Length: 245
Image (cartoon, rainbow, N blue to C red; front, side, top):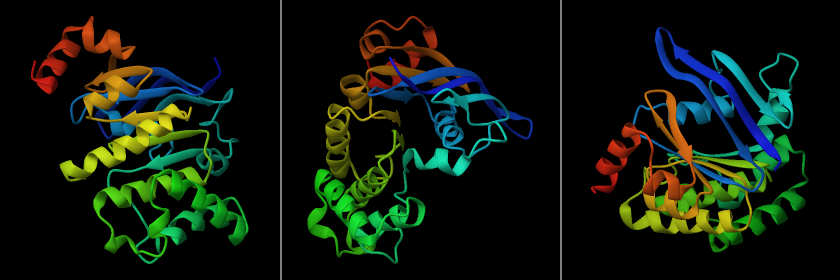
């Protein structure tokens, strides 16, 4: 199995507060890995370290065999290989839907406008937003905004997609439409690393589930192992609370 990203002994502190401690895990090509855990367990910080929005305090992040935390490594080039979908959509309000999906391609990947539009339309169709290309973000529902954000990230044709609680800012009736798109992407073979509190998604769609608590990985395994036979007491307690068993 080809490892796309491998995290080794990763730690992150903010001042004296250690948020991540000695994290080891990897994501293989074509795999969907879900990270679950309570708020404040370090899940989002881990994702932000992987795409270098936060600089890890120590450890290594190996991408295609190279440690991207080495000074000589081209951070910008690495970042273009990661698609990121945030909780709050982060769309450009001054651009319409199509504009949101072409600006990064043209600026970063140096694609022509024509080529960028072609790629953007392909992915807007995938997420069911191709009929809204002239709409501004303020005219869209939360679920529609998040689907545009997913299309925008896909338009960069990244090696791996990172999702940081992509449904947490949505009204309950909109969660389904975003999860449906993510499920279809997973089935298409896209490599995905998903921080989520949607246990149904983690259970049904993931190849592997990682449970974090207080900045460490407590347990990881297949959804079957984690949800049906967790070995750690902390995992069992978390699932009992979350699934109201």
